[in-house]
Length: 280
Image 1 (cartoon, rainbow, N blue to C red):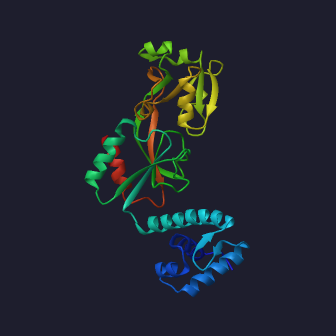
Image 2: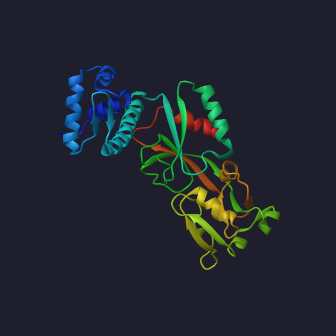
Image 3: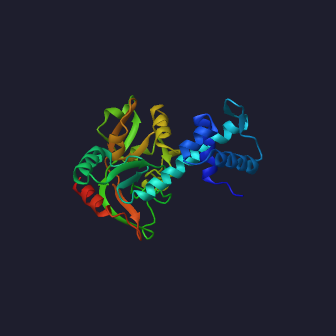
């Protein structure tokens, strides 16, 4: 016999209601069916899950552990069904770091005004495709190179690069920083989703480098004063932090901002999203 979601629902219902009788009422089945289902689950797992008395039902030590996992699995199953049955009444927009930067709030506001029947959900995913490859979003905003043969795309903007530094860094008194100066410092880079590579500088004239794997770790490292970061303009508005200052890099190539989606199965609202981003 294979484990089924109905077995887990029986366990959760019995514990939550406190009795087999009440669980049967809640699930719209018989008490005998609940009892058989719980016995089947215990045989399948090879452990006793419930202490049964004439007055109460309580989970065993093993039952507590199974109950916790059961709740998580049932929640995930419910989410799967809900996402599949809502069709195209929601649009999930993925991003790795900075969403739409200073345009994020305005994009959300205008989307709600123009498309009230389609819920917009911003989803942060620390992956190179902003969650598109992982299936956690319908569209993604990316600033790093991706396989443009695999994904359809639209370039919606180009952003200037900025230097992130500790707010008490002497360079914070300057209005802009040339790339040549940065090579005398150590740069912290998110090698998975960051937009900065050492190719920004000529070979032999490159800064020292250290690596991180998340925007919060990146900011924390910079705040120590030991490192600089180089980042697109969107970061400067999306991640304003005490202890961090941003100054424009005056002579670096801008960063292309692309919206990407699955080429063969685009969300119906893809073109609407591209058009709105183009306006902003």
